[in-house]
Image 1: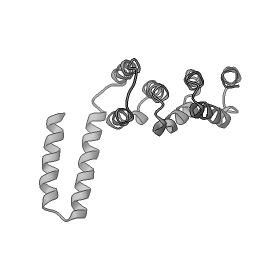
Image 2: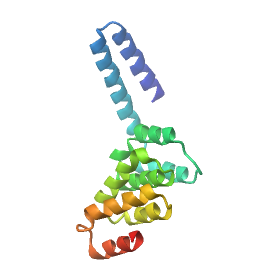
Image 3: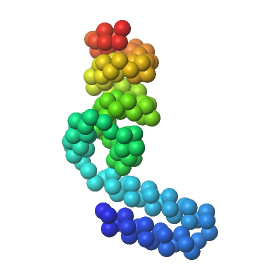
Image 4: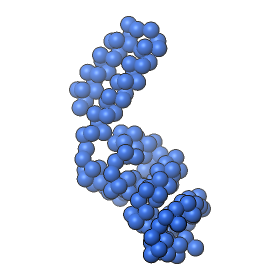
Length: 156
């Protein structure tokens, strides 16, 4: 992979140096998209789950580390199991820049999201609790009755 990335970068750099600035920028963006796509496709969902689960054991992760993880592994585009672990990391490390991912997960995967509601509330973080209540308010009518009851009891 590194050879592919370096080769791509070298070719793009060579071409960029010989083109107009607008064309050079376009080639640079295409190189980024190509290398990102190649890297994202390198790990299977089960491997990503294991990686994220091991990171959940870490006491602290810096926001730049979480940003790098999201971009490198295209976590928003992965399956529900991967997204669930990603959301757990977001909540655990209070990574507010990705709270929209948690909100989207709670909406798209209501049954799997029950655990996340609990995590959002147990941290005693006002912003996270507000996120949980706001997310529930948006989707409670769409939830099956037993799930909605469980979540309501956690939130109120």
